[in-house]
Image (tube, rainbow, N blue to C red):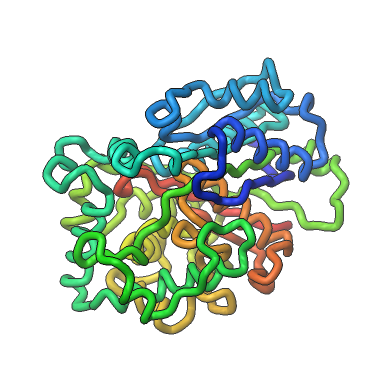
Length: 389
């Protein structure tokens, strides 16, 4: 198995209602990643693209082939991957395996989603297909309602109030305010959190991510290819672990046990593969789609005991200068959650942190980063560990 290096990254600003098509977004992100890598498009032999809703909302499939031809990659191996909200990380994992296994020396990986053009009801129904159809009929076709039920049970079980989860959203907004590519570039305080509209009791607007559009991409290279490239004054960022796990499609485990079993499995596998543990992680790009999911992700990944993740938020441990910064460029909550692209945004942002190019949001001394992308109600969990070396 070859070591795999991320040699180029690219992203579009996360927007609402500005993109013409998912293909246009993907083309822009891939072109920027290729330029950042300093390689010729003809050197790339594969493109793996993550997307969830283009077939439903844009009546367009085969996005990987579409983007390949538009980016000068015609003729390469090109596949589109779907794992609901984890589609971006799924594409990255396939790209990682292709390079690590020696099938390809240089590949492009992209995640793209365009949601905001669709009527809200149509968009809600398209996203709801990531849940168990029979179960969603009981809660209504909405991830908001499923997460509201989960939040209610989490608060009740651990004797907490919604205010205890608010620091997760506040931290994300603090970081997103300094990210020029974030959708919601406004700080949030407790008053703003509590005064936000109730979506489904006890879940408020500020517990949830915005509907948005965006694309992010990376270029992966094998060790020999990567080391032959000029260093360009920045550290190389290596994928030390890529681990995936699944759980049942229903929300049963989340609701009954207040756990994310797939996240537990994928993080354990990632730590083992990297030869590390939770204490070695300098920053964590969590799948903070809802504040309660942030808590469960932290607990399932070994950063806090069950029911104790809220303490990290209250103590300031999750801030940029804390012991475990999360959502360093705003996360899903503030940067935005363009579903199939989210996993790649997490990785692009982590690479900037490890290269020391994160600007005002730079985590000082960051050397090891972990990203975790979830699909559905935790039915898919894909964890990557990155290291600058």
